[in-house]
Length: 230
Length: 155
Image 1 (cartoon, rainbow over the protein chains, first blue to last red):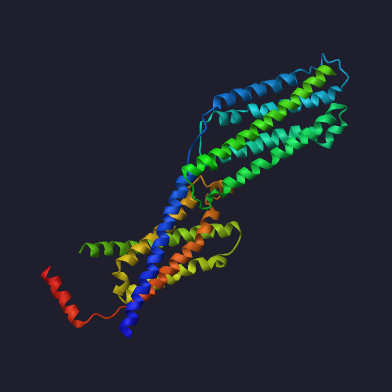
Image 2 (image 1 turned 120 degrees about the vertical axis):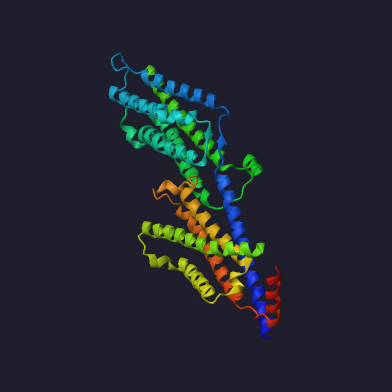
């Protein structure tokens, strides 16, 4: 009886040890796979030159439209203070997009997950905050009602809608990247056809970047029209 | 012969890796607690399996329990478990693609290590249970012992 119990004791011991052996192996390979997964470098060189040209063109458009107003030569009906206010805001936005940091991100052809996160942080702080919230949000808020420009009431809902769309996206993308430390399985088919965290996050941020720039261009076009028409 | 040599190596590295795994775990957990301004005792349950396993290793050494010390499978498993703990701890520090590593300026991804703690406890408690069961070995008969000694002499 005692011998039988001792044999069973060894058997149970091997069972437990075998299970722990399997678990440890599984965890090592899971972590190795996860490290490889999130260490992926995304090649974003496709269409990058076209994107850079398009961005520069839009920045030039904003600057040209903002420069239409000259307080020395303006003879229109709108208050100079209001027009100067809008001009300063548009120029400030153009500076955000034209900054060295912004241009550096558009020059990079390869991105790691950390670099995409840094790009998202840059977009959130320097573009979304400094340009969209601090400058362009004014046109969608009730603060701009003090301006005596009737067409501003027409564009106000458009500005509000676009800004609220822009505000929600980056936080979601950054949160997704922050949660990448949770274990996940992925493969190339999944990344190419459904979702690749690094590449898709980069393109989502770039899309937001372009959308912010487009909003600034639209407002600058409206500004040009009121200066020339006014 | 080869098995004996390998077992000897794994037996020694088992203790070294245990110390390293315990060290990295306690360091990360203390950093985690200090960030939340919590005392060490709030996470003592993470270290209980380490202390139990240490106690069992000490018992194995004192009583020369061959069922454990000469069990190559158990020693390999111990090495693998401690290597896993070390690898996860290393990644919590070194893998910068896990952005929470640097977001709050601590240089450690606490969220990642925290999600591993349950596995850590399972593995260590599993090793403890295995250790206990391997302690109980049937005593070798005198005849078998004599035969073994004669074989060793011939070799």
